Length: 440
Ligand SMILES: O=C(O)C1=C[C@@H](OP(=O)(O)O)[C@@H](O)[C@H](O)C1
Ligand SMILES: C=C(OP(=O)(O)O)C(=O)O
Image (cartoon, rainbow, N blue to C red; front, side):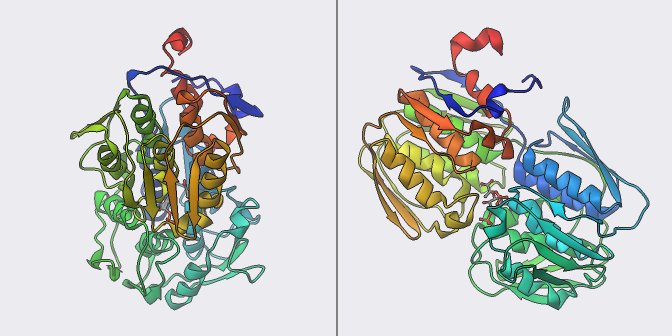
């Protein structure tokens, strides 16, 4: 994929061209979640670390720049090789003089709140308008027991967040896991640099559990042990040294979902190399949902294949794979019967209220959707073209672009918002159109 800028990232809208079908191998970029984790771990380890196949997107670049602002490391980004090199500078971690701004990057902001607890001085971390509405309260409540004073500047539990640092000592705390797993991941990762053992008790039910598994897997890969009692308690023993060196990021399972759904709704075949049965990314399990809807699927050690066919509705609890709910919703719009997607309340506090957004935009295309506080019931039909509002949400843009491969007249507004997690999305979509081959 060429590194030349894609004019669609600056365009007001994109009209998606329909496609009769395809049989392609599609390479997706590295995982956003793993790239964020390796960056955070490298920032804390004090060891030079090379992250290969890193996702280079708005979110991960924001995190790289934010980490550098503490002064203790540099993050050199090589766009040609998709590599980030994190190098210690020998200087201590200090609060930057200016506010840290991370746009709409939720995971980075949540990781940075705890990380600022290690930096001498007071750090203020903020983001764009939507980010200033997203919840941080559970994390703010859990940090004082570990020695860190973190408060919402406006007293509303959302950014800007002010952190008085140099104080992340460790100890025992308890945290709610009901709103976001990112709070728990943030504490576990940052416990790496604590003076004493850190014990984190989850006071209720943890959502999005696979993301905590990814946190543990990333730490394990660099030699850090986390003891656990299921999803009730995690203990990070003090005095561990994360290894530096080289790590490789696997492809992004959420980014993969768009191409799986494209195959599903077009009766086509797609192969995604570099990811398979051993992945801890929960979104890989979208494959099983598509199989239940009527696709043929193959999950190998190092590739995933989906072949579409006539689709039918299913009932599915998607609490463990929130980011691919919009993707499955689009498959449901082309399926016979009703798909009931349940246990997805966390979608209301993502880049936009994704339950409301998917409901509104599918209805625009003539699809019947029953909206619930924590669920969506979608009855498949024959969607018609529409101009899709994307709410500055990359997943809404990418999901509805896939509908446009099957349905004439789908226009995606603000196509540049895909840069949050998948800046080459439109170019990757081009590769499915055989007549565009010469411009690849
Ligand atoms: O830890 C992570 O990398 C993520 C956790 C999930 O958030 P929640 O735990 O808030 O559901 C997911 O939606 C997000 O895109 C990435
Ligand atoms: C919810 C998402 O990201 P974050 O919470 O990191 O902003 C996402 O990428 O779908």
